[in-house]
Length: 463
Image (tube, rainbow, N blue to C red; front, top):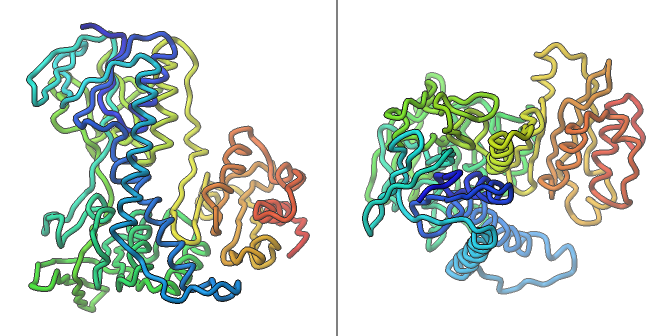
């Protein structure tokens, strides 16, 4: 059987590429080792974690904040099993949606482990045997997997990956989280809201290091208020399992520290899934991090073989993979596919959420920009105060000479949604003045961005 395109991997990048290719008239197959499509994002990542974050945020809010609204929540309890059942239902529903799109677009689904046998041939190994598929083009979209500690292997019981932590049957008494990035903070928050004593250990001097310090300091204070404890600038040297869980030995400067907990979540990053793909045999070049090297059209060093998403350089984000998928397939058929890597949003879905796009203030200064920075606290936003979401701030960074928005950061409820306005503005080459003069409905939290934009132009109004 021969195809115009074979996609290896069915995460957000892979299935998006397959859909786009089919819509552009290409005979397309998608090869996935699992029966369920959707990849890490759908099955054990983005979607299940957000389901758990939503459930636990409702529970935490009911316990801590309902009284202020005159709502009695006496006898409140949390059924972790029911929460997990709901999470699994969300995943199944989304998976059915992907199946529908595959069928609707006439995409051939092949279950099995895909490997590049030759530049125009994919070998698929499954429980039922082996088959070879031929294609004019091959797209690698195999995503990434969790990175572990060299001195302690994951066991799924005591030493947990993020995959394990979204499927716990009950809230542990205590948990140590290694890593204060998005995964560590989100999953640490989930279990802290249910009563787990969560301690976060981070090698860097601050949490969420992709954000400016004023944002991360405010976020840390809010998370500490929710019960999370932090040990920053702390290096984990060793770990051992104990009868009650796990024991860590760490160093902070000259000081030695020990941490003990029932569970250990290792959230130190991810690494690309490029092993066992046959890339070396096919002549596909990798960089020093194990990522696949690509050109401006996402083509590898071998003509006809392309790669996108977590297996190539750049942030390991589902939406980045999706945009690369569309652009790469467009390039395959001679269309001008492109991705604006300067306007990719990042979000950490804690409570409140924190979102960013473009340059931080520190990065903008480092690149030589004279910047105008506008900061607006949501304590001064009517909708935020009325809704009980007044913690946080909006920050807009603009170039003083041109007025162009270089970046923005938001710490607030629904920051993941609010950041889209800035992404669109940057995509269209807009200025802080454009945002400031755009009418926003009142009262809304989006007005906080408008106020920050006013401040970035040197014309603050409500601060």
